Amino acid sequence: MKKPLLVIVNPAAGKGTYKKKFAEVLEIFSDADYSPSLFFTSGRGDAVSLAAEYGEGFETLVCIGGDGTLSEVVSGLMRIENRPTVGYIPLGTANDVARSLGLPKHDPTAAARRIVSGEAMPFDVGKRSGGYFNYVAAFGAFTEVSYGTPQDIKRRLGQAAYVIGAAKSLRSLRSRRVRVEYDGGSFEGDYLYGSVSNSYSVAGMIDLPKDKVSLGDGEHELIMLRKPKNAAALAHLAARVLQGDLESEYIEILHTKHAVFEFDAPEAFTFDGEDGGAHERIEFSNCPQAVQIIH
Image (cartoon, rainbow, N blue to C red; front, side, top):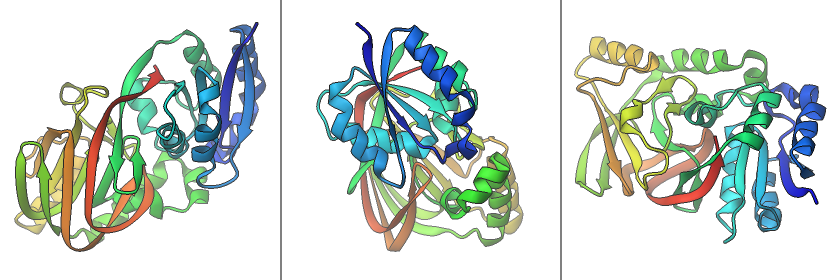
């Protein structure tokens, strides 16, 4: 008797490249004694509904798409009690989660083999006001790059679309006055960027130190970039951040299970690279080891 396998596919991810290797992917699952049930998304929110509606009927769920699709799948699973183990075939642009898990990127057959032979690891999920996020909730510098870049440009240019967008955003960097409460206390100041994350990689460009990040430890990383003293320091900081160098007097990396951000005016947020609307006050908490992801 073959094992049932729920497969949720975002056909728009990765320029539709899933088609080229899809038959081979299904063959790999079949050879591993899985019987796939296929569902295709057609718009935003579909993966949430599919995971929530069908997830409890399967021991394993495979997501084929980008980080946004995986985020929707996990959000859907958070609505049910008996959650399947998640396998991920990454086909998106940034692929932050794939980088964190060490998964093959843009190689569906290699990722499928990893799913049938790999091991599951516990993965923390973030809870926010009004929903969940998978690996990052952020405001400020560069966050608009992820959701402000048109999908057709992302598909045509890939990661270069993020780099180009980030370079353009340097012209309009501004600080925000924010008060932050976290497990260890609180602080207030002018910041260019702030985030709560559970990832080694953000926006496909910034790598976090692996000795400071654990994906299933029940804590998120609270990352804050303070406003530099002058334009020269600002330019230097921006260049270092884009190069993945976070060792700076202007950057703080803390660990917390809970965080609250308060602004003087509504501030735009992104959740897993998608537009999350503007918030004057927003609260985050960690859902420890909420899902199991194959790596």
